[in-house]
Amino acid sequence: MKDVYWKSYMAETETMRKMELRILVIEDSELRAGFLSSKFSGHEVEVASEPRSAVEALKQTRYDLVFLDYDLTAAPSQMLIEKGTGVYIAKRLRETINKSTPVVVHSMNIRAAEYMVGLMENAVMIPFNRLREELERGGPTAFLERIPKEK
Figure 1 (tube, rainbow, N blue to C red):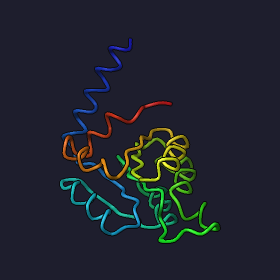
Figure 2: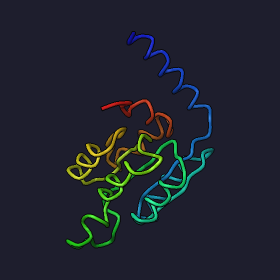
Figure 3: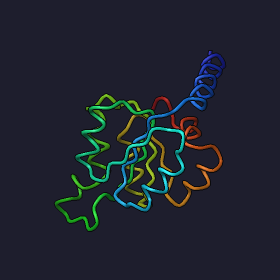
Figure 4: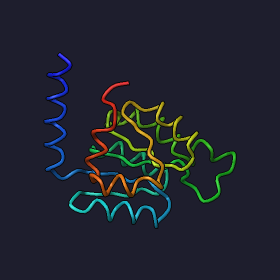
């Protein structure tokens, strides 16, 4: 039975490689958001730079893949720890049409990234400094193969 599931999953992944993906990049750094967007040519890309606009986008539009950072404010204060970070988005994601959408947490804050991955159904952590090689190896669809379907 596992073999049948695996073959079906691989066929689905191959189909996804050939089609245009709708990708949401949640990143407050214009430089990083620009880098990610440039790597997703041929796909529809939206960028959200702050948590509330990201949650609204996730409520209104169905995405195929989400890239999520932890630090979403220039200088997070104690009051902004919850509402100014990717944790806020990870917790709200369950309340949107994208609750099962694959998420790549690309934060350099490993502890926070691990916590965020634990809050979501289909997420994987890849520190931003490793994204370049990952994207050059297989593009955004390669991440779909790495994200667990179920936890």
